[in-house]
Length: 338
Image 1 (cartoon, rainbow, N blue to C red):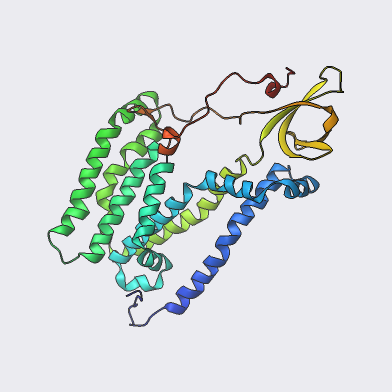
Image 2 (tube, one colour; image 1 turned 45 degrees about the vertical axis):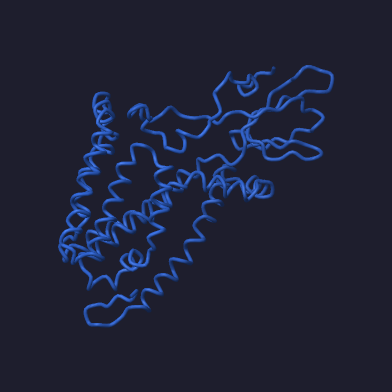
């Protein structure tokens, strides 16, 4: 059931196995490279500082930061592979045995796709949910073509009826957001909200066999080249150390300075802080007067569009999860003593 035969009737397991071995070898190395690059970037390319960070930063904290920052990428990779591989399978079945993309889509369990959809539904921004629904209806239609190609009643409903109905409901829901985005000039948000529902019915069936490999492999290759760069840039900016402010001064005397930076460690003799310039400061514990955690610096939102009370930049998880209310900024975080 899982072997794919090519035109001459043979099976291509050896080539698929070799490609899969290379892929499985590279995948575990990518997160490790990201973690090393994050420390190198945090140390401002200074090797002694990087070695100090390696000594004190918890691997669990680094992995947690990596997971929280890039959790959205996992369902994106799974769903895009399933769609592109499914299009190749239904468009050129005879060529599918030579393609790792098609083999991956064929052997991908349905429960993996379902978990990816649920994870994306919670972690993707609202303006990306129309893209998610487009991928879902596309996967449903392609799966129906593969499994129910002899059913004259069920197949048209799944490949055309469901995508059109879902697209119409999505357009009705996001119509206020599209109108507001166009009014304030956020055309990228308007396109993300309005275009995917229209493309759903076009991605549920085969493309011409001659163009199938071009239409599937080149987008996959482009995504494979761009995704590591995007993921790397996002993770390099992710916080892995807590921002803090430390008041220092001699015992019994007024505070003489406030050291701001990222707290590396606290031991029996000193408190180690990495400032924004990459300099490491060792503060003797007998000079430490007070400490406080400072909020992460955040930029303003890229989009101010709100769709039926839901900010376009917020995910469902961020919208419903409890958040810490912003209060008055501690003066120590601004470099002033209490």
